[in-house]
Image (cartoon, rainbow, N blue to C red; front, top):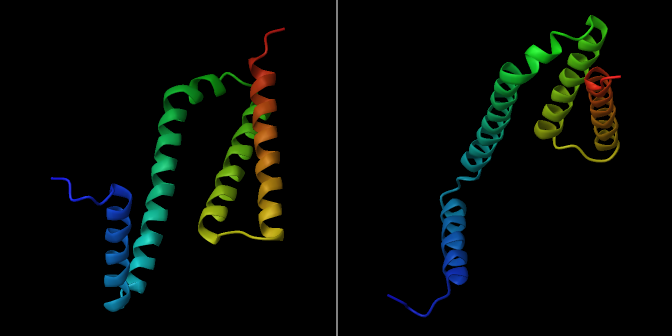
Length: 122
């Protein structure tokens, strides 16, 4: 059944209808709440995947490292998680964004250098 309307136009009309319903019924608060819940659920999903990856692969390897290297690696990973959570929940801009980028770069650098130093066979 081809009615002559392209899928792009049809999808734009559906989107406009949903937006109109939200505005007419004054559901902006519900949409904001749903967006916040989806954002939190996304962060939790990322955390669960990272935990499963660490549990299956990282824990065994890191347990063979010297204690100082393990502390540095875990501290860098923990600070990076806090930094990413701050970034995703606060919506950073300006100096806060610059600080978050510097902290993320420092954490990634510390974690990578520690991992590379422990994984290099001399």
